[in-house]
Each structure stands twice: as C-alpha cells, then as structure tokens.
Amino acid sequence: MEIRPSIVIPVYNEKDNLGQLAEELKKVMERLHPETEVIFVDDGSNDGSTGVLKEIAEDGRFRVLVHGRNYGQTAALMTGIGQASGNVVVTMDADLQNDPADIPMLLAGIEDGCDVVSGWRRNRRDAFFSRRLPSMIANMKISWFTGVKLHDYGCTLKAYRSEFIKNLSLQGEMHRFIPVYCRWQGAEIKETEVNHRRRIHGKSKYSINRVFKVMLDLAVVKFLMSYLGKPIYVFGGMAIASLAGGTVVTVYVIVRKVFMQGEWLSPLFFIGILLWTFGVTCFLLGLLAEVVVRLYLETGRHPVRRVREKINITE
Image 1: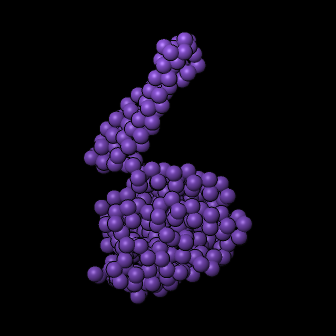
Image 2: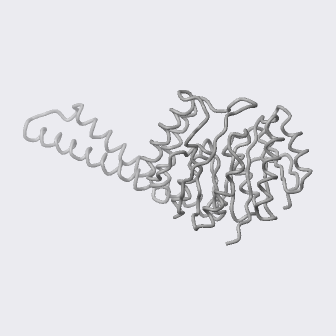
Image 3: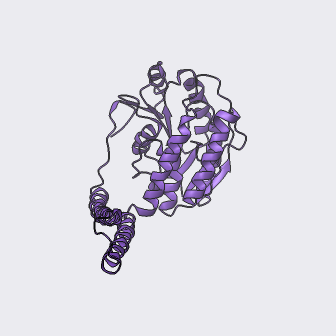
C-alpha cells in the first residue's frame, strides 16, 4: 500500500507555536509521499493565529480551514478529516507537545498492516495531579468500559486508515474515542510510544472539569457501541422488568383482597399501576428510538459546521 498521508491539526490560539510547527513539518514531509498535505483547522482563534496560518499556507502543501466560531477540538478534527484527500489521516496537536518527527513511525505501523496506530505519551511532560493523574484514571475507565486496551486515549497524535474515519460524525469531546469507533468497525489497533514535549508558548486548553465530560461521553460511547442498532433492547428490557414487577404486585394485591380481606386502594395497588405505566412508556420509547436510529443511519445526515474561509482547498 502506497501511503499518501493527510496531517490534520486543529488550532485554537496557538499563534506563537505555528511557525516552528510548520518548519518541523516541512522537514518531516521531505521523507513522506510527495502528495502529503497538512490541513490546519483554525477553530475560531482570536489571538492572530489565522494570520500566521495564512502566511504558512503560501506553501501550497499547507491547507487552512477557518471555522466561523469556536466549535471545539472534536469539531475541528472532523472538519479537517472531512477535507483530507490522503488514504491515511494523521492527527496531532498544534501546541508543539506532539513531535512531528514521530509521524513516519506511525505511518510505518500502517504499512505493517495496522488500521490505527495510536501514540502513547509514556514520558508525559505535564503536571501530575492536574493533568497526568486524571488522564490515567480516564484511560483505565475507558479501557474497562469499551474493551479497547490503550494507555493514552488523550494523545491526539494518531494515524488512521481513512476508510475507518471518513464517515464518522462526532460531537462534544468524542475525539478521544475515535479508536473505539474504529475497533467497532473491525480495525486492528496498535499502540506505540511517542515523544512528548513540554509546552513552551501559550496555555493549555484542558482543565480538571474535562475528566467529568469524558465520563459522560464514555457513557454515550458505551451505549452506542452496545445498542446503537438495537435501542429497543435497552428500553424493552426495562419495560419487561417493570411490567413483570407490576404484574407481581397486582397479583399480590388481588390475592390479598380475595383471601385476606385486604383493601384494593392500598399503596401496593398504586405501585403496581405505576410499574405498568412505566413499562408501557419504556416500550413505546424503545419503538420510537428504533425509528429515529433507522432514519439516522439511512439518511446519513450530520450536523454542519460553518467554515468561514478555505485556503488551498480544492473542492
């Protein structure tokens, strides 16, 4: 397989890092396919990053997409991936903490037959309590819930065969789960150690509250992995359990009334009615979810992000 990589880089307020990053990328691109492209996605920067990217784009191998506002890292990655023309997509951060020199190593893993090569920042150069410890906890939880064993989901430096990610439509903070979606499609995933450098310019966009967002997104991913094509199994299971419970309670109320002279309008009677009502509601929600999922999968319509400006992009 001849590898023609597209390198996708989301940018948000990284003005002081972009020049050096471009120079390092140029050195790496000399070792790659001559049609290698770099796609910067400016996600609503307000520090002058857009102007720097326009200067970088004077080299035709660099392409720039400018979002109309800040949509978030996941949205920026999706925009760049959607424009990528290569048969392998490499993603990385713009803050210089990912080392462009590691890109050939990731591509070598693709050449060896892997579908996804995920970077592992084993010697991570970040604060322990505010960054590394929360990340370790999140990585363990993600691996446990999804069954995909990776040490570092949060490392943006990864390489993917394009057929596994071109049709993804992710929102929120879902970019870290891209390997999970790829495994869902049958991708073979390999993890390799990559260099991680200290941040010199700018401020990190991550904070401790990102951990809670990851946990919520993980619940969504787990649901989608298990039940996207069959939501009736979730709601139907709750409906059956609730209807069964309502039936048991109702039968007990009848038996008590007939044989023990109990009252009809006891708390148990109303609990039985409530369980039956909840069961019927869950069943109807399951049917509705089935219809919605089928419409989504069949139409393939996804939310649109507004791109304000394109540089060196051929439609």
